[in-house]
Image (cartoon, rainbow, N blue to C red):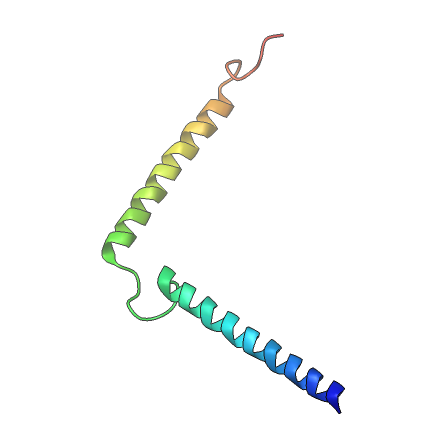
Length: 76
């Protein structure tokens, strides 16, 4: 009888911990703006577009450096 009560108590604690984890996760996602009302702001979209352009420019520079013959080889 006491063993069953301990098992039911442990089950209740596990369920409570799972509920707490889900609540904390949703709260964190709301804080990050991943879910919930509000959506993305225009300034966030503009900043992301600028970052994409910069990354494309850097990627192009890296590809050009890799394709240059002789300059990227180490003389031994």
